[in-house]
Length: 111
Length: 113
Image (cartoon, rainbow over the protein chains, first blue to last red):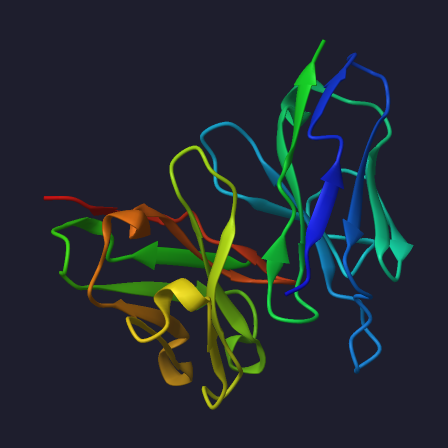
């Protein structure tokens, strides 16, 4: 199974400041079809997961442009350019190149 | 607008069965792999099963193999999860999702006597 490792596991941030979450996979996420099925999910307290980013860097419909995804191969990053209060929650990376696995989750909270 | 709406959860005794449903709309369901994911109370996300576009390929996490069955009805834009021989450790919120289209709100399954 592909293991997804997120860092940090907790990220206290100041409102208006940037935040960054790293996700590393135990093997390349490039699929035989040429796509890289790496997604980022946001889970606000008491809410279901919400798709933010798919295939590394594609923002899902309605996702603010302060969220961006980047990376390739085994190393990926989610960046929030200016954290807002509504961004508090747990963020997961997820791969669907080989079966489906998730990172442990990164808790984003306001300092 | 993409919508995925799960139903069928509830309280069931150990050894019992439940059938979850997921109604999809807003995207071309018949062209998509679909997945079931669960989240135990206070825990992270765990993939449970997935199914290809025509239902000919199905995969399961080891802990549910032989007990759970994923299926779909493309004519009804619906995804299902038949859960048998339920255990306390199956207690979780169950979500259906398409990896590039979105997630449902989830349905809670509680296995307890």
